[in-house]
Structure formats: C-alpha cells, structure tokens
Amino acid sequence: MKISERILEGIKTALTDGKSEIKMFESAKEINEASAIMGSGSGVGGRVYFDDAFAAARYANPFRMASRQIIVNGSDAQFVAKVGNAANSTNPWGYTVNPDSGSPNIDTVIWQLPVRVISAQLPVREAVMDDVNGLDESIVQDLMMEFSQLEGASMGINNDQTGTTTISTGGTDGLRGFGSYNYGTNASFGTSGTAMTNGLHTIKTVTHDVTAIDYDSIVTIASALPAQYWSMPGTAWHVHPDFIAELRKLKDTANMPVYLEVGDADGGAVANLYGWPVIPNPYLQSPAVGAIPLILANWPRFITIGDNEDMTIEVMEQTQPGFITLYAEKRVVSTVRDVFAGVALQGV
Image (tube, rainbow, N blue to C red; front, side, top):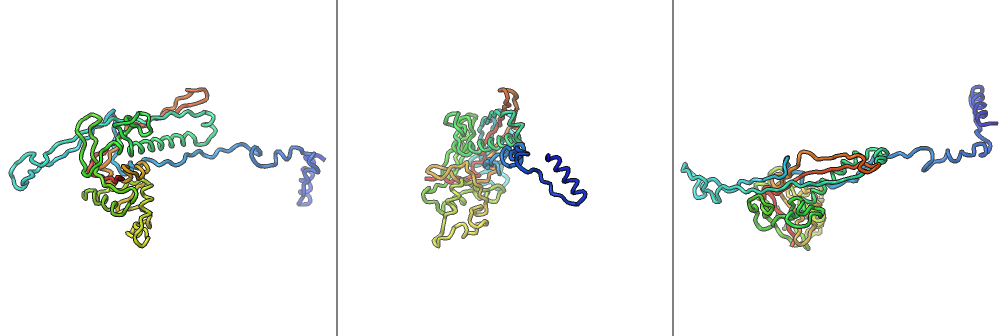
C-alpha cells in the first residue's frame, strides 16, 4: 500500500473509531530519502539565520566626560586667557584711581591650534550588507567609537611638536596631547602667539617613585590642586588602570587595604578618592619613569575640546565591482585651557 493510501485509511479509521495509528512505511525503501530531510544540523531543514551584527565594546574617549566642549567651524582655533591683576597691589583700599597697577598687571595670553582630522575608508561587499542583519548600523556605530578611541589616545599621549605623521596618535598631525606639555613644580602658561611652538604650558607636577607607590603621594597630589577648584563640579581623577590596580594593593601595617580603611564608598575598589570620582583612563601612561599615569583636575576648566559641527560619512557605490566604500572623517582640536586647574603625578 502506498503512503498516501495509508494516510487516507488512517483518517477514515479515526473518523469511525475515534483514534487511529498510521503506519507510514514498512521499510525504509518506501521513502529512501527520509533520512536526509528528517534529520537536524547544519544544512538540514532550512536556511542560515543571521543574528543581528554587533561590535565589541570600545573604550570611548574619557576626556570628554567632563571637559568643556565647543563647536569649531574653521581651520584653526585661538584661545585667549586673561592674566594679571587690576587692583593696586600696594594698597587697593580707598578711592584713589591707580589704573592697571596690579602685580603682575593685566595682560592676555593667546595660542592658536589647527583643527586636526581623523579619516577612514571601509570597503564592504554588497552581498554581505544584504545578508547580515544590522551590519550597516554596527559598522557606522563602531566607526564612531573607533574615532573616539583614536582621539582619546592622541589627547592622552601625543606630542604635536615631534614625531612622524604616520604614528597612531598623529605626531605633528595629531592633537596637542599631554605628551606636548612641560611639567614642573609650578603651573604657567606657555608663550603667547600663533605659532605651533606657542601655548606649550607647564603643568604642575608631583613626582613619585614608580617602584613604591605610597599613600602620601596621593595625599600630596590631592593637596597640590589649588583649593578654589576642589568644590567645583567636574573635579575628578583620571587614572591609568594599571595605577588603579597598584592603589588597590596599598595596605596598612595590619595588612588591610588602605582605601577600604579610609572609607572608600565601594569597598576598596578605588571608585572615589577624597570625595572626587576616579575615572579609569587607559589613554594616560602606564606607571613608569617619566610617565604621567594620573591627573587630578577640574576638567571643565582644564581641558577644552573643539569639534567641527559635522562628522562626515559618505557612501560611495561601485568603487569596486560588488563593493560599496564608506568614507568617514572627523575634525577636532583640544588644548589645556586653564593650566592652573589640574595637577599631574609623574614617575621618577
């Protein structure tokens, strides 16, 4: 009896008796292809399903978390700081008029920086874009995060005075990172002017032994930030993760964690120090001789980041047969603005 006949017979039995068992076949020979279509696994029973595409998390630029951000729609940005005092430095009391008799007298400091560009080209096969769910959105979002990652690295360690134009942080084509500035016992503005050698400020520095990170060094740098910045919104520590790991290891004479003992709010993981939040920043330098692994600052005054209003993303079709090419660019400039609003810890 054919299989179709068996199915019909089973239906008739079910209608008359209320139940039926349908014997589909007596031997595999009746449906010799059954094992190929009734199995499971790759290539059996359907098409390939593509889950939505995603990109692994990147560490976006932490300098943007509290820094001052402005729009710069031009090729250069000039920064102006008013310095000096207006009142008579000998005796400012009373009605005597003594114009511009402070010590030092009123003046301005200026420096000018070019807007820098990060760019990328990304060819993608059209068939892949059609097949994979959400790939185009993932590519664009990850590209924006990659640009944020690149600018963070340039702000953290780049020296715009030296280096080739092909290194990852930009060198002379990159941003004015912390590798560009001078470090000393007192903060001061750099020379005034529009040349690339102007505006190279001196950032106040506390030194420490890289082989023996100690509690007193952290107290010293906390005290080194001028008191007028202590209670301002946006004051925070930016610390390289390797340095945070060393802080977590600090113990007292009873072998107890130091920062747990002083009341760290999260139980010793160093999320806050002396009331200021700790922001892990991998774009600073890992602890080493000469390195800057930690900066305490009032970031809205310390750093200014200027962005061009538009981030360009263009799709160029058929640049190669079967491909589309994404071209993206982002223009940005950054600088230490109020040099007195931050202090750095430097290894010796």
